[in-house]
Image (cartoon, rainbow, N blue to C red; front, side, top):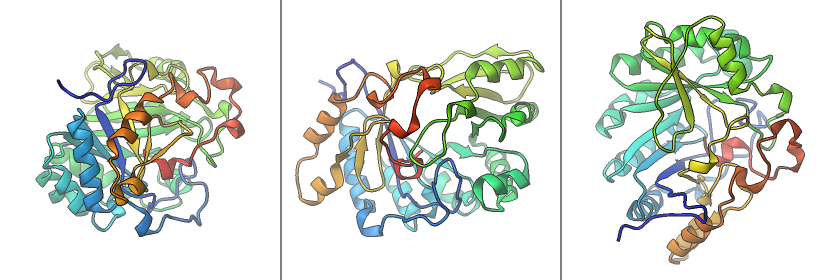
Amino acid sequence: MEKKLTDTFGRVHNYLRISLTDNCNFRCFYCMPEEEYDFAPASRLMQASEINTISKLFVAQGVEKIRLTGGEPLVRKDAAEIILSLSELPVKLTMTTNGSRIHEYLSVLKEAGIRSLNISLDTLNREKFLLVTRRDQFQRVYDNIHLLLNEGFHVKVNMVVMKGMNDMEINDFVEWTKHEPVHVRFIEFMPFSGNRWTSNKVVTLDHILQEVGNKYPIERLQGEPNETAKKFVVPGHAGTFAVISTMSANFCGSCNRIRLTADGKLKNCLFSQHETDLLTALRSRQDILPLIMDNIKAKAKEYGGQFHQDFENIHPEDIHNRSMITIGG
């Protein structure tokens, strides 16, 4: 019988997101609380062989897709080794990156068979990019997105929409899809430790669709099972846009994702307070499969059991979680 990682709500988990590092060469305020940040020492991070061992175990339990995240996964010195090692597993391998080092890793990505990447880009304005990331790297990221497009990669651009910060650029991103096959994903602003989240900064699915609809005709595209993004297209455009409506219209009921942090902790939900330490158990030669099973069984119905979809009444100080950079995107 095929093994499945199934929780008490019948959700089958076949998608593993692995954070390679909590380090990053950008300093986006909504992800990393402070400029001077205490990164985990290398000894506390999963080593390449440990990532491979744990990944093989998950694949044996039915995982079919692995996404590498960070921090910024490509700042890790052995990133190429890890990517190529995981590419030998029978999974769809992909990555979320800030795009700043794509030009250095293009050949590795091709060799690993990675054909789809998510690039984080919250603005098309260089000055605003510097304000958000605290790094003057807009042109490098923009050029690397076009490098990927020219090389035939499927590129999804992740844009976290924040009221008063970049919500006035929504249609600029949609316009970008007109002549280029870029797939923009607008992401509702989510609460994490230290990211200065308030409900009045959230730009919802309905608001985004209204904003786009005021300028363009919109067609809804057919979604795929377990998909987090609600996809749309402006007829005649080469690319598409989507909305990840975590706060206003969640997709918890069909969630198939599990997360492994860079320090080897398993989280069954992005917002879960509870974590299971797989790395320490692995290093002490314990069987970690029962730990994985228990973690999945303990998954809450929605939002890690910490809050509900009525996001306007959320008090962020009551949510107990890590900062986004220590969880992995």
